[in-house]
Amino acid sequence: MFLALIFNCNIYCQKGTDNITKCDLETIKNLRIHKDSLTDKLMTDFLFSIDKSCQNNVEWSEASNWTLFWIADIETEKFIDLLKTNQNELDIPLIINEFKQPVNDGIDLIGIYKKIEKLNDNSELVIKILDSIKSAAKGLGLEIK
Image 1 (cartoon, rainbow, N blue to C red):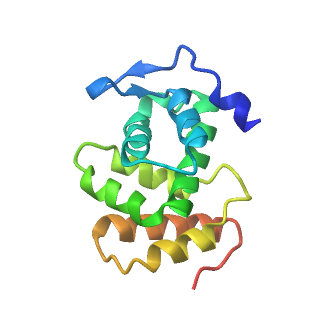
Image 2: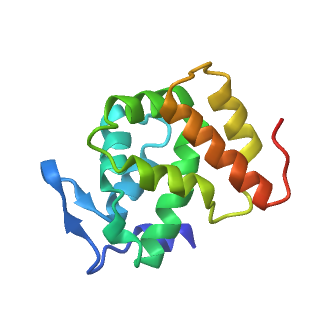
């Protein structure tokens, strides 16, 4: 199903700043194609493609939510660094909200939480992300200690 999601870019795609297309499933497809060699640019393009205008696009919403957790899991430190570096340009409240609402029960919330916590980063951004993941876990009946 995920592959079907990433091959469609429909009327919800919009050009953003710096030629980044909002809600573009091609951005997610590129991440998956290069999963063994994710670059800062690929991940940053994805982060900049996240936008409130995408919320009515179910395919984008599901794929981007899963991808957000996936990147946080496999490239934790780089992911957090990119968020912090670009936080004035990204829609950080929307990204934080995404962490409160995982679309897939198979997402390892506890594992991702522990990886982020292990960075020992006490910035406001990281604390909000950790709180959001903890909230999501609690909603699923999981306890993060």
